[in-house]
Amino acid sequence: MTPASLPTARPADIGLSEDALRRLSTAFTREIASKRLPGMVALLARRDRVGFVESLGVRDPKSGAAMTPESIFRIYSMTKTIVSVATMMLLEEGRLLLGDPLSKFLPAFAKPKVAVETGGSVELVPAAREITIQDLLRHTSGLVYEFRGTGPVYQRYVEANISRRDQTNADHAATLATMPLNFHPGTRWEYSRSTDVLGRVLEVIEGKPLGTVLTERVLRPLGMVDTGFHVPASELHRVAQAFDKDPDTGEVVTLLDPREPPMFQSGGGGLFSTAQDVARFALMLLNGGALDGVRLLGPKTVEFMTADHLGSIPGVEVMTGPGFGFGLGFAVRLADGLATSPGSAGLYYWGGIAGTVFWVDPREDLVAILLTQAPGQREYYRSLFRNLVYASLAE
Image 1 (spheres, rainbow, N blue to C red):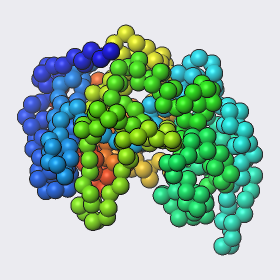
Image 2 (image 1 turned 30 degrees about the horizontal axis):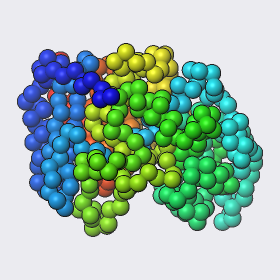
Image 3 (image 1 turned 90 degrees about the vertical axis):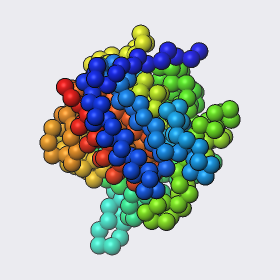
Image 4 (image 1 turned 180 degrees about the horizontal axis):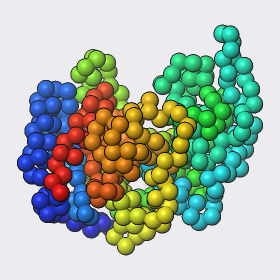
């Protein structure tokens, strides 16, 4: 069944300046003309209504097919936010606790070791404590992403070909369980394969593949009809593509293949989606866990997820810049100032490596979504988009 369309409004009716929105479109049109960006889709919703949807440029640079609001994008790490919501649904059912050790569900992670470099050699020492479910949600587990460093733990991940697609989620978690941690759990924030492992935890608890868990718990109830780990053959013509080569570096761009259901259903970065689907997910969060009469989470759970869970734990600023903490699946803005773009304390967001981002600003009753497939340019366009969106708030 096709879900009902999200309610819409004229920009002025929800406090958006039409002049400022035209500036947003003009700025992105200019970037597309400069050949640094193939195309984009943007969506703004405020006060429970969508007031701005824009699609510019091309969906496919090779064919020249125009971008449309219905285009499908690789959302990569925005997958993490959906897995995090599914995890908290299990918490609300009493099927896990944040303080549960990971080994309760995946015994191979019991008694982890930490790699410590001293005097040019590496020693493996017992971790001060085990990884918990909270560590996985907030990226304080000691796991890493192999492409974010060059030390011995990163090298072990590379040697194990940990990112290969021809493995199951169980295989992936089993391999990670043999690796040393990069630091003692709970002592640092480091972006990592934690959410991939969390996806395996969901599989163990539910006794189903991750894709089925997410479809049954989040995607189908919310009417996210175009979100999944692959794109059906009948919809492949809607998939947005990047340039073959990065326009700044000349390096070849390689992105996920949408055509076949993957063996590895990456909870950290495997989903495809659309602006409408992401909007449904984000509005559910903004509305305290419910949308169109369907409740996924209680309001206090959403409030808890989107609060800072780091405190004095360092590291997140490497990814977010100043002024942010991290909750359970989302970066969380701690102050109106400090950051390099406008926003409100309490805003929460995350993005994907191919160029997608969304945020929810409860104080402004705002959801903002930018979908592109421009991996190397993503940080610039995220900042540009934030500046232009906040400039459009007229009241």
